[in-house]
Structure formats: C-alpha cells, structure tokens
Length: 213
Image 1: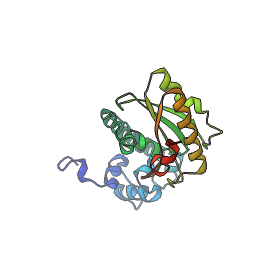
Image 2: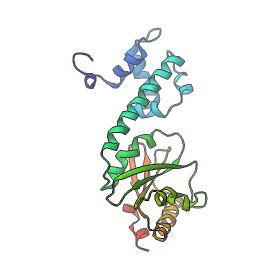
Image 3: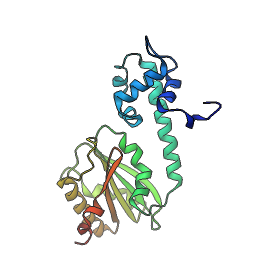
Image 4: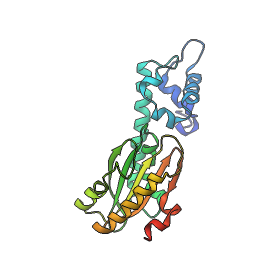
C-alpha cells in the first residue's frame, strides 16, 4: 500500500489491513474474502449490523466495529465529494448525491432532495422510514422544508432493500399525489427515483404522463 497506493489493493486486502490478523487456518486477506463472500460486497458490509458481522468466525466485536467505522468514513468522504458538485441537471446527478447512503439502508426510507431556482442542491430531508404508500405518507410533509427555505423544486427518493428497482402501484400513486400538490404550493416535483442496490428507476422517465395531468 505504501509503495503502490491504496488503489493497487483489492477490497479483501484493504479489509485485511483493518482486520490485522486472521483466525485459525485463515490469514487476514482470506478473512477479508470471507467477509465479502458472506455479505456480497462492500455495500453489503455497509448494510450489515455489527451483530451479523460477528457471526463470522474470526470477526470479534472489535474487528466488526473497526470495519464498520472504516466503511462509514468512506461514506462520509464520498458524501463530502458529492456535495461539492451541487448542480443537478439529470437524475444521475441527484443519485450521485444520495444514492450511496440509500443503498446502505436496511429499511425503506423516503428522502426529499431540495433544489433552488438554479437547480443547486440546498438540502436533503429524511422524512419517512418503513413501507411507503400514498396513504401512509402525508404529502404536505414533502414540501414543508421546501416552503420554509424556500426551495424551487424537489426530487423524491426512496430505496428498495429488496434490490428490485421496479416501481409499485403505490409508488406511482404517491408520485401522482406529490406532483399535484407541488403545483398548488409552487414547488415543482422534478422526479421520484427508486434506488435498489446498483440499479435505479426514474418514475418520471417511465411515467411522464404523471407530469402532464
């Protein structure tokens, strides 16, 4: 790592540096490989609670905490870098802003990304946790911060821990209600984006008719 830089190391080798030592019959790199195999990826490790990490032989509480802390530091560094680029011109720009964190959540959450008149990012509201439907979400809450700031437009985000980015009828109904409410309070809903692992769905791209009614 010192001679070639951290980019030259595999994910398992970077984990090995955190783990320091392996366990009986397994060295630290092999233990890192087992972690990745068990949880699928670094994103899987990010989502896993500490109690799940410690179920793997050779991963005690201290090692689990060290790994989770390192992943969170990476998350925060990535977040800082993304927020330096604040202009949102397409769905992928907004995904760069909040997608990493949403992918790591174990439960479904609804977030609102707030933009000014020039589509600059001005804030993010984490509003709802749990199953989302047009009846369970108070649509007025989506605009509360936007009106207070004020923000000119918003983008809705939620995640699917199931890793299926397909929109449900409830997702479409919630989007329709939000778009109509936005017209009443003069805050445009630019999109509703579903994040599922490395995939995403833009409801605006799939259902442009919701913005025409």
